[in-house]
Amino acid sequence: MEPLDQAGRVVLAGPLTDKAGSLIVIEAESLEAARKFAREDPYTVHGVFERVEVHPFTQVFPKESP
Image (cartoon, rainbow, N blue to C red; front, side, top):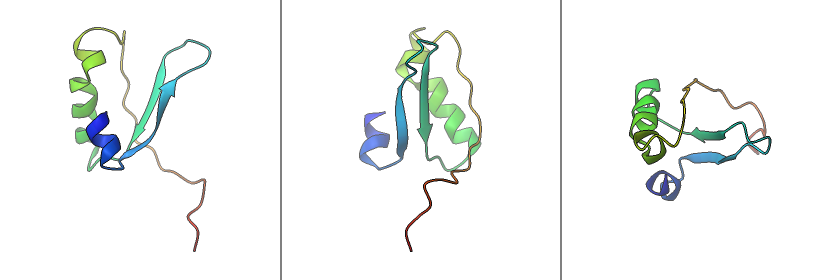
């Protein structure tokens, strides 16, 4: 995550407060690039995440300033 964050591509990330898991929103070149990121995430590789779901997302809010 650090390289993506340093590149300004992490939109938001953190644990869900109901202990249901974590949410990571990244900017990726493609859906396959996002899936590759998820597959190679150390938490996935080392079995920390029980399961991982990747979904496309369109940000609507907040709107960009003119």
